[in-house]
Amino acid sequence: MGSYSRYESEKAAKDRTSTASQNITDALKMDTEIGVENTSALNDSENTDRSGNTISPFEDTLEEDNTSGYSNNKLKEKFPDYNKSLSEKVIKGDNNAYIILGRDRPNKASSGYGGKGHTRSGAIDLVVGLQGWAPAEGGEVRTNGKFKPGRADKNFGSFNHDISAGDAARIYMSQRADIDDYFDLCDGNVGRSYSDSAIGMKADEIRILARKTHPAETHSMEK
Image 1 (tube, one colour):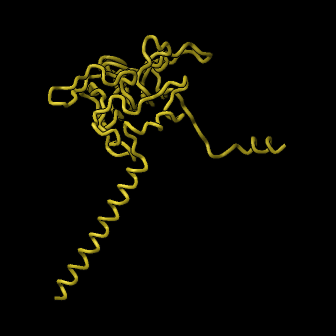
Image 2 (spheres, rainbow, N blue to C red):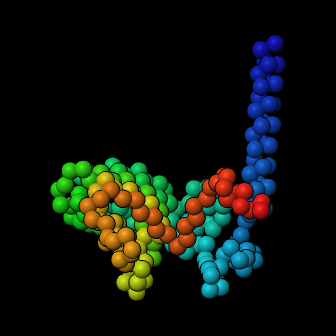
Image 3 (cartoon, one colour):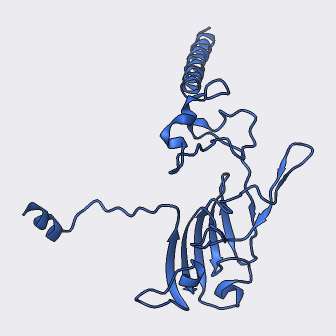
């Protein structure tokens, strides 16, 4: 009888926990849900670009329910498969985010010093938004409703966006690279970089922040 009572007590505690968890889930969904009838959030400044054009949060979605991705829940969307070479180890996320460990390669497998067969050309590529201008390009929705993604190489892009904006954002580190050529940089005062180790960063916006101020600068500001 004592064991039976303990079982009942444990079961009741689990039921209460389960009910509370479901209540929290339902409340969060009610707070964040945006359906066809409730589109006010689309008018918020965070959902428009710098020109004031509306940005659809549901573009290229593979979900029937537009609330699926809220609160950073899993979200199925259209994006390409990276065209991996045999020397590369690829860590792939579920939403077009990659860490690529391999050899120097700015585009196709035949490009860069890795493509030329060089040693001492190790590279780490952190990229989000592969083929950012059209991630669904080359893919197709099959008759069973599943999306077959296209294949995409790296695209460092050009500052002439009429040619190609490139992948959405990237931090690229290479043991040997022609980094100025890769990122389509013009000649600067320091000259072009060839066959040197290099780090390149590219995105629509880049912020580099430091918490501390140099003592000399602090003293100058106090004056």
